[in-house]
Length: 156
Image 1 (cartoon, rainbow, N blue to C red):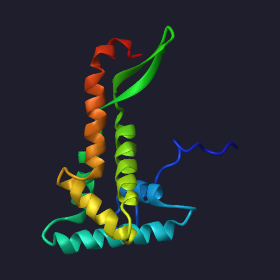
Image 2 (image 1 turned 135 degrees about the vertical axis):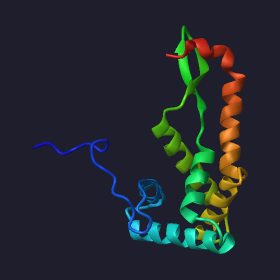
Image 3 (image 1 turned 45 degrees about the horizontal axis):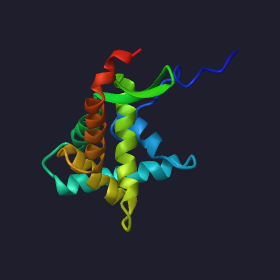
Image 4 (image 1 turned 90 degrees about the horizontal axis):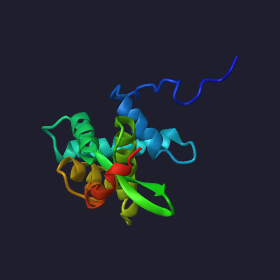
C-alpha cells in the first residue's frame, strides 16, 4: 500500500483552540521538527495578545490578522518570445493563506533583540490593525501587480 501524499493527509486541529489554521501556523513556525517549542512560542504569543487586548477573543484576532495579510493578486514570471514579463494573477485561497502565514513569520523573525513570542504577538496585533511589516509586504505585492497590469493578457 502506498503512503498518502501531503495533500491527502488531514491536518489535525491544535489541542488548545481546536483550529486547523492555528495548527498550520504552528507547523510553519516549527524549526528542526521541534513542534512543542513552536507550540510554546505560539501559545505564549496568544497569552501576550490576551494581556494587551483583554476584552477581545485571541483566536478571532489571530484569524483576522492572517486574513488581513492575505494577498488577492500577485505577479508571476512568464517567458514570452525571449522576454520575461511579470504577469499579475489571482491567488488561490490555499496559497493566500500560506503566503500570509509566511509573511507574518518572516516579519516577526526579522525583528531582533526580543523573545520570539513577543515579536510574534506584536506582529499579529499589527496585522490585525492593518499595519506592520507583513501588511507592507502585501501592499508591495499589490502595487507590483497593479504596475504590471498591462501584461495581464499573458496570464495562462
